[in-house]
Length: 360
Ligand SMILES: *Cc1c(COP(=O)(O)O)cnc(C)c1O
Image (cartoon, rainbow, N blue to C red; front, side, top):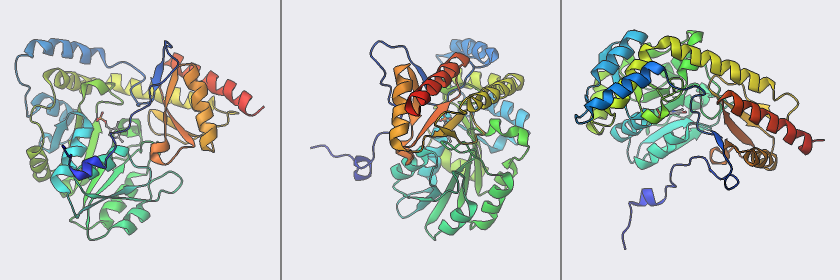
């Protein structure tokens, strides 16, 4: 008999959306928070040009990408760590800094991968209650124990879409012991940048990390590129467990060009946010309560598990896949990514028709 490590045997595979629709039916996925718009044409051209370098290993220092990020965000390139998606950064952070006997502290509806990565590291995963689907700094601070090594907050959050002000993140940091790391995962940060409420400066303290990704606002989910602002001492430990070639030449080139095309990214954010607000407005009269969102998705609360399942069946019958939330302890909810215009119209119309049948 071959036996896996016991902590892995107890772990379910990372949950993604159930892709089941009627056989032969075309479907549209509104389940993975992928961008509603294609990537910048400049990113695609750069990726195509980089294919010619395919016989070479990629630059493991990510020089051009780090320079592009540093220029746009006015940060020190020596504080930038890149990874194959921010998922890789979360993974290597947990591997480098947490293990048996340590606790990873987060909140009730935190991003699911925090739990996966913590359990792979054999750390204890602790989630404190949220208040109205929003991170509670008081609950987090009350949840700290001597074994807490790392606190993780996605801001804005996934799957909630809610966010807390930068001042609350600062209050959290100030209230945490100096030997506790704080990760602020800003995978949707670009959707809140106009609030001018950033916390990048906290990284200077040497105990705080801020992660971003090219998967959401930049529309490069399939390229697998994330980046983090990380103090050099922390980054040095994370790099020890990172595959030095985890980001390909093509992905590096695409991401650097996408970063340099801020005009395109900003347009994507504006267009997506407008489409999101239109979708939410269209839910009036539908038996689904949308949660206010600062992201490219909307969490909808249908009240009960049965009503959510009924809506999910109606959407699937039209080929629209949303993300079921039972894995997050929210079986009464569905999460809708804001996708292409036609998909949103179809989703909206389907929900209206469904709601009329459900609640005549
Ligand atoms: C999508 C997402 C990520 C990870 O994205 P990558 O594609 O790995 O960069 C990280 N955190 C949150 C909260 C997300 O929603």
